[in-house]
Length: 94
Image (cartoon, rainbow, N blue to C red; front, side, top):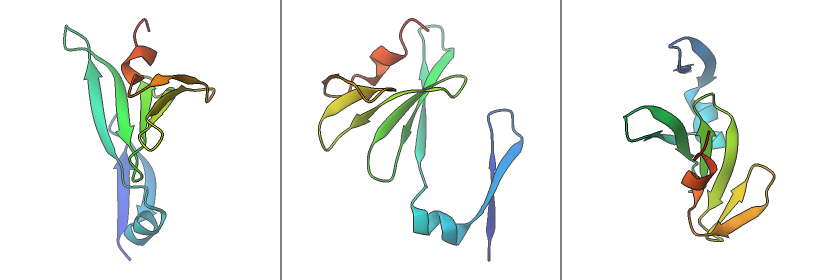
């Protein structure tokens, strides 16, 4: 069994899982950094295996998600904030 180790943002290993468990639970995700006009990272958008986009602050606090199947954006309390992908509006002003 092959073990995969994941690093947190500080470079420390914080999680170890087998490749089989990752494939079976479909936890493989894609992460994109959001930057301000100075190039400073202000947040992250993580794409789940189902296509759902979740937005996090730099401190990794979940702020909301976009559901492409319903074409709606929701805040952290699962309240719809609009139609289409409006995730960046949840980070502005932090």
